[in-house]
Structures are given as structure tokens and as C-alpha cells.
Image (cartoon, rainbow, N blue to C red; front, side):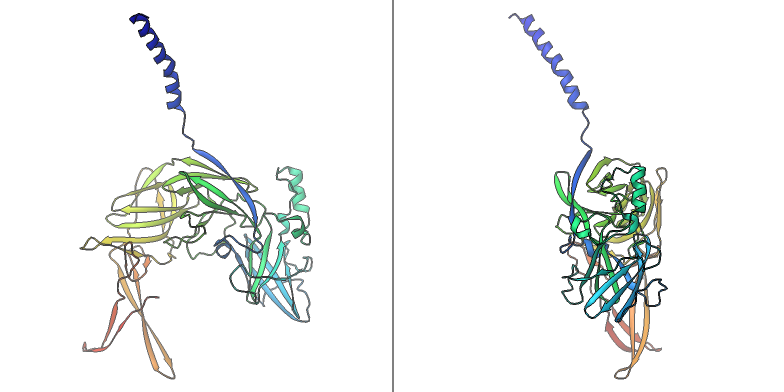
Length: 448
């Protein structure tokens, strides 16, 4: 073949390869992935950390005004509380060794038309041993009764509303998402906790993480959206729970800010510094994560260096590390959940000062056009509170407590920790002086 022929063949090869190269370059990266979840029954073995952190509580209230309280030759205990947004009343009757639960499953305030449920003596899921551990159920609220299909037609919705609870055969036919157990460990309260959950694994950046969905309001659906609450706030949300074992240690626990890995299901989540929309199948059989790039704004702390945890109804829990310059987060309104101030000493050793539970409502509004400002950290105000007691042996006893607050009203744990070690600085000392300045007594504060 002559030289001209070889050039033509080379040109044809380039032309043939060019569309392939364009196609490979223009093919979008995979941003959405769906993960399957299996139903797991929680009768005698629970998901670590799930039950203790998510259960609802009914507290004893012997003065409650309840209709249809059953008569009993033995003791009768009344209980009230909130479960999945419902105000619930119930009663426990004790006859000899038999305990029977009467729970207002149809939410009409009358116990006379609710079936009695006799307790089983079981080993508690709450590590309390065998004594005083009783389990009732599985049970289901009447409005959560539904047919076997989840197609959601108008006829099926009507049937679901008019169907009556069938508590007796629940364990024989298998448990559904709306089912729950009631446990009694002590006569002062009842524990209401899920009977089932959805459990599986998600993969992010080629790493697997245990995931659980919980029908936390016991209505038969797993896709009810909610918003995180401040630590210490009362749980009044009707949302479901989406849990990710973020540190991949095999349990659902708390992070260094005491923020639980069990969080209300939200539309958007932050995971490994990226953001994903979350779509959950109504029956909890799957969860879909779709990578997103939301519109971002800035939060300016000035020169303060701090790690923050903020929460939003749309984005859930977000963790920020602000290093003396504005940090980025999606636009929206947030509540401050936790703070850890950071500072270097003269030896370049980093120290941290962690906040207590933030009970005052500190809101942060993030806008795309203007950075939000938040004054955290120094100057810190130390306050000493005195308390005086008296007993027959020692006479008058005076004790002192120290609190530490910043300009935003955030209260911090007294005593900084050395970065990377968790070692605290020595507790401060105290001197008691008289009017003339003479030392009457000295002492050392204690942590705790």
C-alpha cells in the first residue's frame, strides 16, 4: 500500500474512534441508586441502639380521667402519653400473677371496647433481666389497619378506615410495619416500641453502611417526612426514622456531639460531605439516594474556630467545621444543635470546649446572597452559683457550681479537652475569702 493509502486508513480510524470518545465523555456519572431493605421482626432480639433511642413512653397517671376502666380484684394502674402524635390512655390490671393491658387502640378515650391483652413473661430487650419484664402484643392502632396490598386505591383506603383490629391472630399471620409491643419493666411506666423494622445496607463511595427504617408513628408507612428536634426537646414529631451506621461500628449510637445516628426521615441528608435526596418506598422495601448539589450560602463565625451541628426540616443534621472563615451549607433555616470551640495554645496543641445541651432556640437563616453571622465563643462568662444545705451530722454545707456561657447564650462544659486525646484540663480550684481578704477555705471543683 502506498503512502497516500496509509494516510487515508489512519484518517478513517480517527473518524471512527471520535464518536466513541464523545459518547464516553458525555455519559453522565451514576448519581442515583436504590437499595433493597428486608423486614426484620423485633420480638426477642433488637437492632443495637434502636429500641432504647426510639421507644415511646406511657407514664403512670392514677388521676387520669379514663372511661371504661376495667374492674379488678387486684391492682389497677392508669397510664397516659403520646405515641406517634396520638394522645393515648391505657390501664394495667394485676390479678395474682396475671397482668392484662387495656390500651385505647381506637383512640376514643374509652377502654371498654378495646380487647384485653395478657402479658407474656419475657427477657427484656432493655438489659433489665427477667424480673418485672412483661410484654404485651403485638398490637396495632385501629386507623393503621389496612389490607394486604399497598396499591392505595380509594376502596382500599376506605376499607382500611373501617376495618377493626384483629389483635388475637397477629402473631400467627406475621407482623406488619404498624405493629408494636408494649413492655412493662416497672409499674411507673410502659415502653412502646416497634415490633418490626426494615433493615439493609447502603453503599456510598464503595463502602457499606448498615441502614434501618422505622415506622416510628405506627401508621403502616415508612415514608413520613419530619424534622430533627433540639437535644433535650420533647419528641412530638410524627415522622418515621432513617438510621445510618455512619461510623460503621455495627450499632446505632451517638457521635462525639451526642447526636444520635437515628434521625427523623428528611428530604435531604448530608453524608460524607456530600448531599443526597432520600426517597423511601411506602412499605419500606427500598430507599433511593440521589446525589445533589443544592444552592449554598455562607455562615460567618468571624475569627472563631468551631465545629457545629445544625439541623433543618429539609436537610436533617449537618456537621460543619469552621476554621476562622465562612463555611458553606445549603440555603434554609437551621437550629443550632451543638458547638465545640477550638483553639491552639502556645505549643500549637489544639484544645476544645464542648457545649452542653442547647436549650435556647438559636436559629440561623442561610441566604444565597448574604452570609449569616453568628457570634460564638469568647468572651466567655463564668458564673458561680452557691447552694446551702444543712444536715444533722455536718451542720451547714455550702456547695458551688460553675457555669460557662458565651455571647450567644450557649452554655459549655467547664473544662477544655486536649484535641485527639479527650484529656481534660484540671478542674478549677476555689478559694473562700472573708471581708478582709483572708482565706477561710480552699477546694477543688469536680467534673460531673
